[in-house]
Amino acid sequence: MAELLLYFKPAEVDPTAPNDPVRRFGDIVHVLPDGSQWGRQECLDDFLVIRVEGLACEEAWQYAGPLLRETLVAGLPGVEIAAPSRYTLDMAALDYDDVALAYVSDWHVPVVSPVEFLAALKDKADGRNN
Image (cartoon, rainbow, N blue to C red; front, side, top):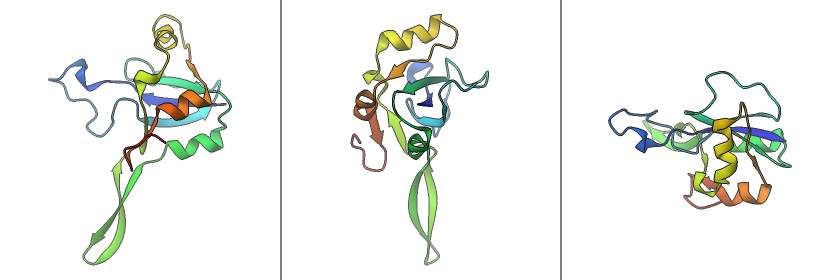
């Protein structure tokens, strides 16, 4: 199974202090195998780690890449990074009680079913659910 690191800092926490200007709440930032040791900075309140049942890391990596945009500079085609994360999760679709346990239990990792994951997954390239 794969564990996904999600950006978990909503913009409304403190509107006077800008968050990461290119990250959005629920962005998929990184992927590791379940049970991996995450760093001390990769925790609440900035990040949330979730585990997706039945999703292999090799498959999960497709969700951790940037959003690319084709460009034309001086008549030459190119590609630029439009956003550091192409995919984001609708955080409201996650089980609130399971996410809340992450606040009270050391390194509790909420588990999401494949159906829940795909229902919450959004592709910034087209703005629709995946």
